[in-house]
Length: 174
Length: 174
Image (cartoon, rainbow over all chains, first blue to last red; front, side):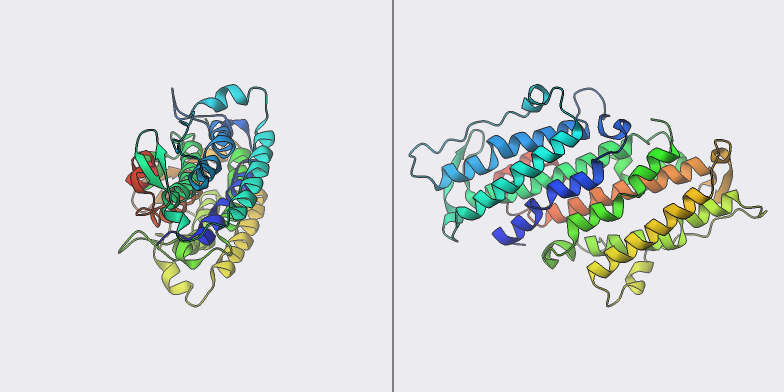
């Protein structure tokens, strides 16, 4: 499948409501549990998604399309959510993610990205030159990666409860 | 986390709407694509979830709790969906899954499962004796496994589009 802005937005605009349906108002045993030291809970992942939408994806797209000479991306802080979200409930975070994502998609549409814009580039702190279509594809895959991760983290909480079925459940053996 | 019927139902009752939000009305490039020969698309997985709810999970729970002497489970057909769903749209399948799941949860609640019921057993075709709580835990993990799988199958459609970011996207490297 080749990159398509329309098809990318189909995924990006659904992620917040998908995660709300999966997570809102369920027990904290599911949403605050992680996979062990240095791993993230569903709550942590939602914070990470918010931080990405606030500081990273659209900001980088706008930089690529701007007239600025310096197209170096600001490195993304993968741990900002731990400081930012102190005291916030999961419901608050799910609402916050929904709001910022709606605004970002509106702004993404306003950029009126053309086929030739997709080949414009910015400078990633590690990878060097990357194109706008690679950035936007990664935004989509990043959403899906974290939906998958959240499902896995939740599933693992029952790892000791499934008995011999563990053999059939790929998610518990990753 | 120990098995809890209430916390299990929290997940089971959310799966159909979570999947509807993720999948309904998006391009078939996302929902009918698989990961290569002998693998499943999102569409195939929804059919598999329906077949499980129609023939497997609750049926096995009812057998465990029944007075029948023979507690052998009927083997589950992992490929029934390919025949069952010919000509149906994804929206039809998502509706069908939602309806059967709602009915199953209602019937699960009607079983009034007690703490001691959870240790009652049935005979799995491969594993032999398994308990009701293992069966119900597996139902929950099976839902989450397939949410994770669907996200992965969709993400993979952009595998060639993300450029160097592939290194950071675990879901593309599984």
